[in-house]
Length: 53
Length: 515
Image (cartoon, rainbow over all chains, first blue to last red; front, side):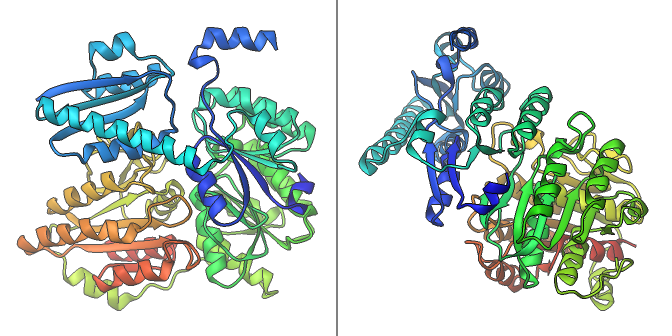
């Protein structure tokens, strides 16, 4: 965490796109992830996928 | 009247985008109600309760599909609204394609493509947070979790894991943070400086950081923790981590801790961490025990304003005065305002968008003005029986779940609060209407302008009844915020709305007025 305070902030934004837009507009390095619910939102399929990992 | 729905299969957009789109659709001609929403079970229940349910939705919509549901005056207007919504959705895809930028779909791909990434800002639905957050911690990155509805056990597990790895987990339900001078999510644009803040209260961080900035000092780091961090189950992991990080941070000379009163064992742990400090520490446990704070060698502050002012005095090496908790109230203004009230006008109606600010007002007023009805959990006040109808003195936080279910937060969309201003104006017992206008990134572009539309209507309504309503406001923000605090204040003052420099100043004025 101490290294976080000593280095330039580089953000990965996952979820609300507006947060990435405002960071980008003020010149902060940001990469937006167009996140979608994994396994098409199917909980059973998701737990199966997690077991396979 | 007709009810129509359209299901767009395998279509996902973020919730804020969809709520804005829903607002747009509600504005189409002949539309009575509309929602554009992802077909999760939770959202489906919401549609059922809102009278937008149909067999089509029940049979066809899944958790990865987008539902457009409208109630319209007739078939033609419903069709037009659905087509208009699809056009808007297509536009957003087209603009993405036109930009030609690479947009990753997973954290892993983003990390590969952004070497040196050191913080992840997460605002995905709460139930998916733990899964993603574990991957992020395993990859060695810090995070801020804006999402709410993350299970408590998940928060504890993630924070313990982060602590072991020397990483920071701000949140869940962390709306504001300032890291290395960068305002995240709803934070304000403030001066950089030597005061570090750890806050388990979102608008508390906004109020303290902006007041410090407006007084000419600045912020080194503003670490948000999420409100649950100070509960016994979490044990203040992030607050303590934050204090220790600020103790080791060369840029930080003064530390401010802001929180609602932590659970007793957490208070002890937090104060023990603060007691180790060789830097001055100002503590504002809203309504907490001041003597306990003093015993730990820290400077207690009763209000957020006092916390900011004490930090500024310490930063300027002026001795902080431990008992300076007073507010200078303009007695002549109090007298003049009182003279304008009719005999029946005796109640405060405080309509807040910032939870911590509402809580601060409750703490300041509950002992002096009699019973207060509220939707905030607080032992010294009455629980309001119907959040949509005020009784006696009322303090409402419009950021609570009952108002934000399927709707944008009032800091982004103040419609519900504006409607409530009109309702309060109809009540002959309303004397004072208090509003907080919170500026900052991602908030409404012109909160004062939006509130004034309702204020004008409310004043007109009262005038017809020979009543004069007193509007009290505070604008939380700086001139560097894109809404510009000075401009917002000017607009309000031009229409005879009282504007106070802090929430505590506004509450102190109201206290004097209601005595």
